[in-house]
Image 1 (cartoon, rainbow, N blue to C red):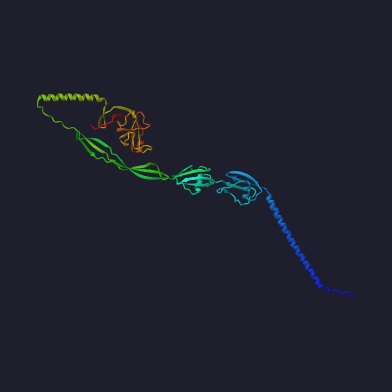
Image 2 (image 1 turned 90 degrees about the vertical axis):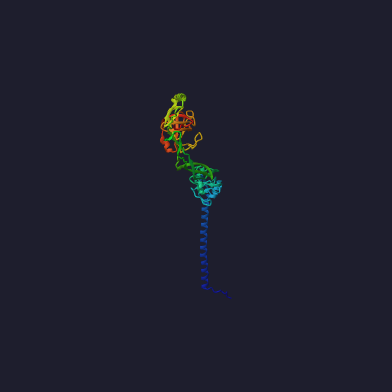
Amino acid sequence: MGVFQPEVSHDSQSSSKSIALRWEQVNLRVLSLAGAFSILIALIILLYVHGQSTTKQISVIIDGHVQTLETRESLLSDVLAKEQISLQPHDEISLGLSDEIQDGDRVMINRAQQLSVVADGTTKVLHTTEDTIGKAISKFGIAVDGDDKIFPSLETSVSANMEITILRINKQTVQRTTNLPFRVIKTADPSLPKGTVRVAQAGKPGVMIQHIEKIYQDGELASMRMIGKEVQTVTKDKVIAIGTKKIPVPVLAATTATATQTQTKTKTSTAKTKTAKVSEKSNNVTSKAGVDFEYKKVIKNVSMTAYSSEEPGIGTRTASGTRVTEGRTIAVDPRIIPIGWWVYIEGLGFRRAEDTGGAIKGHKVDIYYDSLSQARNFGRKSRTVYVIGPVKPELN
């Protein structure tokens, strides 16, 4: 018997070879891609490991003090944690904590200082990294006006736990009215009989407006001073006329010779007595400005200066308690001229010793003037002074 052999066609053999070839090509591409991917992963791992193993050098500056650090960390937060450098909530840092650091980086850290600011009745606790008090309070919006006082000053350097006090200063200008007393002037009137007194002009006090500056410190009055003044109403002096006209003496006829002789003897005796009294006082009697007066002593070459209440520190009250008055008040050395005594100064007239002064020693007199410019223009003079006594001489 013969063996049956199946038929093998040419088409079947050709199809099997084609499939095998295509499968081989696909496997080669997959293997190529897998190999390339593996190589990439390996390179990334190598780069990461290399980066982690590289040492970086950075500078950390804390409040101006420089520290040089070497680290393998990549994040700033990790570097600070490893070096045990802590940060407070108000501290300032030049880089973010999550930033990656590079070799040669400079990290600036400014520590915040705590301040206590007392102002406007309250106390505020602030934290600042500014270097001066002025910059610190300006950053927090605390205004300081030109007249306000601040302790310590704005230029003071900030330090830890510093206490700052701000005093609010307010100025207010008010007006104050004061009366100016009038003087009483006595003058001789030859048209009036001797011994007659008449008011020739009524006196009227003047009015002065003073400008007073009041300074309030945190709402309370701290001080006040006069910054100006002006005369609103001029003082009108009182003038008294004193008669000097002689009254004729009537001649009476004598009834008897005896009466005539008696009167003659009496007049003679009285005349002798008056002559004796005048002769006793003649050495200390003089006549100045139409007034005859007796003086206690004469002081020659007395140094004369002048002062005014407009000068700083000079008030309107004298050492004797009176009010300073131009044309009357002078300052003296009480050892030379007693307080309350009247004097006559050559070229100036009658003055009263009412005030004293630290620089008024010996033969020196200070003349009072209302105007500061007039007092300064007075300069320094030398005069003769007649020391009279506690009663001002009257017109004859």
